[in-house]
Length: 244
Image 1 (tube, rainbow, N blue to C red):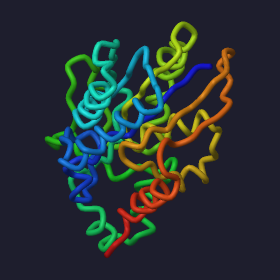
Image 2 (image 1 turned 180 degrees about the vertical axis):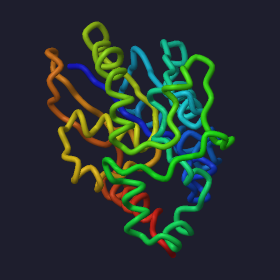
Image 3 (image 1 turned 60 degrees about the horizontal axis):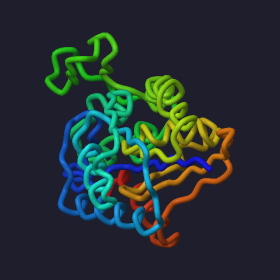
Image 4 (image 1 turned 30 degrees about the vertical axis):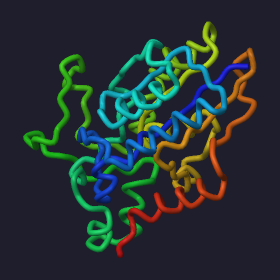
C-alpha cells in the first residue's frame, strides 16, 4: 500500500487574528506550534514513516513540517519546497480581518471569495508592496489574486508531474501546505464538484491520509484524530468568514 498525508499548517499569527493571509509570509502562533507538535506525535503513534516530504515557500507550512518531522525523528528525509504549493492568493483582501470584511460586504460575498471555485478576490494593484516576489519564479507567473480554480491550475501540474509519480518508487509522502492549496488537491483526488468544494473546510494541523493500492488507485481517505473534535474544528473554520 502507498500513502500520501496532506497536512494544513498549524495556526498562524494571522489565523489567530482572523485575517486573510494568502501569500503573506506569516509565522506560526504559539498555538500553531503546539498543533504541529501534536500532529507529529499522532503520526508517530500511528506508525507513519515517510520517505519524502513536500511543502510550500511559506514559513508557516515549512515550520509546521519541521516540527512534525522532528517529532517523528525523520528530520533527515528529503524535503522539496515549491511555490506551486503556496496558499491561494487573496489579492487585496490580504491582511484584512475576515469578520470585519463580512460586516462590510456581507457573509455571502466573503464566502464566495473564500470558498467559491472560480471567483477571485479583488486583485492587488501592480505597485502594491504585498505582491509576492520569489527569485526563482518568473514575474509573469506570480498572481495578483486567485480563485480556487486558478490555484488548482497552478498546483496540478506539480502534483501530476512530481509529487504523485514519486509513489512509484517510494511508499509514504507528507505534503504540508495550506487550506486552499490542499483543497485543490483533494478536489482532484476525490473528484469533488465545483459546487460541493465550497463546503470543504480543512482544520489546521490535522493529518488527512490518502491510501492507494500498488497501482496507485485511491482506496481510502480519512482524518487522523477524534472525529467529533475534527468536526468542531471544521465548523470553526467555516465560521471564520462570518460577521460577528
